[in-house]
Amino acid sequence: MVTANSKILQVKNRRHVAIVYVNGGEIEVVDCTNSVNCRIQGVKGEGCPSYCPFIADAKRYVQGLRTKYMVEVLNSDT
Image (cartoon, rainbow, N blue to C red; front, side):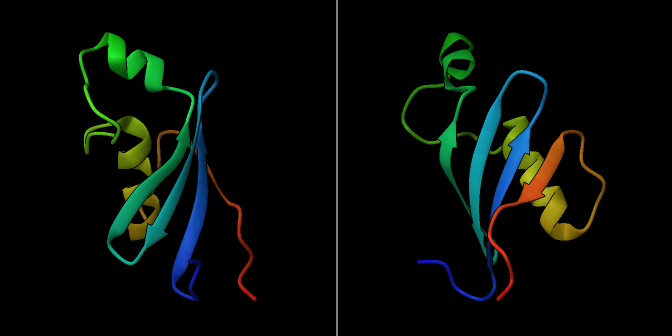
């Protein structure tokens, strides 16, 4: 459920896109097109690791820091 403090972010580079739900300090990946590359690199399971560049950029965006990839907020503050 989307609350007032939560954000849905779209983090994308030239090839891949990740949709990330951020609620306070909790980050959850909704959809990611980079999952094939993660499996090739040996990441097992359903979740994304914390060192994933899309997760790292979502954390940096929430902290107000500069990001490597383009980050766009999908839900509006109403």
